Length: 509
Image (cartoon, rainbow, N blue to C red; front, side, top):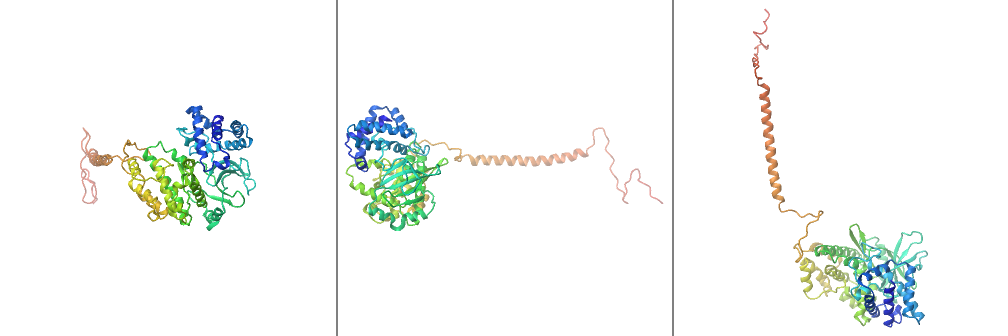
C-alpha cells in the first residue's frame, strides 16, 4: 500500500500541484498525476504485486491508511507542512476510490480484485484516484440531521460528493447522501424551479429508480438522501461482460437498456426529464442470479449536467476529459446537441443518452462516443445484433430531435418490437449447445412421435383382438367334455313346463 501512495505523492510533487482542493477537479492535473504515478508504480512492482497491493488498499483499516498517507506526504513535501497535510488528506481518500472502482455485483463491497484486473494503462490508475480533496471526513455528522454519521466516501465528481451515512440507532439502516457543494445562485434556482425534487419524492417507489428519501437544500452543504444501492454501477457491471460470448453479452445489454428506459419512461409521463443519464448514474442491485438496475439523480440531473457542460467548455486539455470518461461519467458524450446549446429540457434529450448507452453496452466499451460512419454497423452486425436494433439506436442519437423517438416510452415499445440479436449465428462463433433451461427442439421429434403413435396403435389393436379370442376360447373350453368322461344328455323341455328324466314325473289322475 505504501508503494502506491508514494508513487502518487511523488507525482503530485513532480507535477507542481499547488492546491489539490482546487486544481484536481476537472483540470489536467489529475490526468498528469495518474500517468506519472502509473509509470512509477510499474517500475517498482510486477503485475502480480500490483494486483496484491491494490487489494490491500481496498481492505486496509483506517489507522493503517492514515499512517501510510502521512509518511508518503512527508516524504513528498519534507519542507512544506501545509502541502504535506493537504496531500495526506488526499491520499487517505484513495481506498474509498479504489473500492468504488472495484464494486460489482459479485462483490458489492469492492474489497477484492476481479479476475483480469490489471494496471495496463494510465486510465487504470486514474480510476483509482479521488477527483478532489473531500470536504468531509469519516465520522463527520450529517449537517441538518442530528445523529446520522458519514462513514464512507462513495464517490466524487460533478458538483459534489456522495457519502454513505449510518443511522444513529439502527446500524443496518444506511443511506447514500449526495452533497451539492458548488451550487451557484442559478443552480439553486433550477433545483427549486418547477418543484422537480418534490415531484420526484411524491412519485414514491418506482421500479428501476433509486428512491429520493429526504432533502436539505439550505446552508453551505445542501444534500439529498437516497436509498443506498450497494452493487456498484453500470460501468463495473458492463466490464464483467467482456469475456462473454457475443450473444450472451448482447442479451444482457438489451435487458439493461430496457430496464433503464422503463425507469425514464415513468418520469417522462410525469413531465420530468433526467438530462444526465450515463452509466455512472445507473446503479446495480443484485437480484438472484440476475441484476436490477436503478437510475439515480432524478430531480437534479439537469443541474448536474449543466455544471459538467460548463466545466467541459472551460477545460483546455483532452487529459481532463479522461478523468470522467474512464468512469462512464463524462456528461458531454451523452448530451444531445439541443442540451449542449442550452435549449429547454425535452424527453428526447434522454432518448439521445439512452441510444449512446445502448451502443456502448453492445460494443462493450462504456467510454465509446456516439459512432460515425458505417463501420460500427458492420462490426455489430457481424456479432449478431439485428439490423432493426441498430436502426433504432441510430435514430435515438440523430442530431435532429424530431427524428428521435418522442420519449423513453416510445423507445421502449420499439425496443420490444425489434428484439435484441439476429437469429443467425454470429460469424466466427461456434454454435453453442443449449442449456437444460432452454433446450432447442430436435428436428427428429415429429418422426419419432409418428413412429411411437403407430406402434402404440398396433399394440392396442392386437390387445383387443387377443382379448376377444381368449374370451371365446374360454367359453369353448368350459362346455367341452373332459377326456374319458361321457357328455351329459341334453335337457328335454316338458311342454307343460316340467323337466323330463326317464319319462319324467307321472301326472296324477
